[in-house]
Length: 248
Image 1 (cartoon, rainbow, N blue to C red):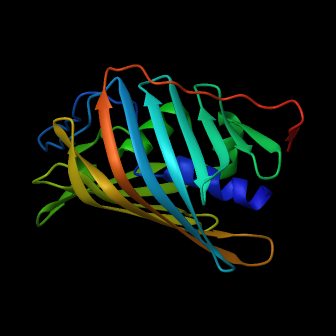
Image 2 (cartoon, rainbow, N blue to C red):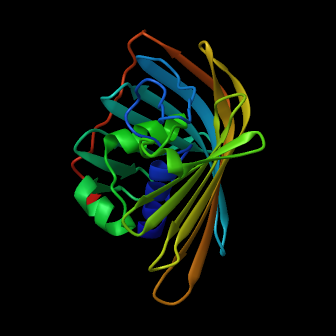
């Protein structure tokens, strides 16, 4: 279960794109980079997730809810049975497994050290929505190539390349590379459909390559929404850890 939890954790962090806290479109001096972002108080989506590694392939259904700048909640089911839940707040990420009667708690400082990248609630929230991981600051970081604006960024040993369609203003691809380990992630977004008065990527694919003690792991995560909506109607975020569950 520990390997599954780490894979799920990686998915949570990298899910749909990479972003900072939701703000107005980002502008660079002389060159302009505008990214269309979804305005909301509450977000609710239903999706099918597929996890694939060298040994096996797993598929789950996910129910995802967000209260802006506050909490992210996910419920996973497998063949009609509740498999687990994830609760993400400003302090930590908790993963609950109903299959193994256990749970995991990850703090952001621990995650930042594990992934060698600054991780906090707002990175995760905007990652699910498909925005930039870091704010755009320097005009030299932005290169226009045909219909794509490529924004190059660096944080520590991690280089990030963001590919934004300069017509739709949507982030379509992100490539992350860690220079010392060679670990990498490539994320693609497609099938943009209206959500509220903006567009949202209903299809996402994430390829994660990282070194373990004995080999190089290659994991692929695909996500396909069948429904996504935003509004100001209050949503519930039920999450309770049974006393009989063990913390791992």
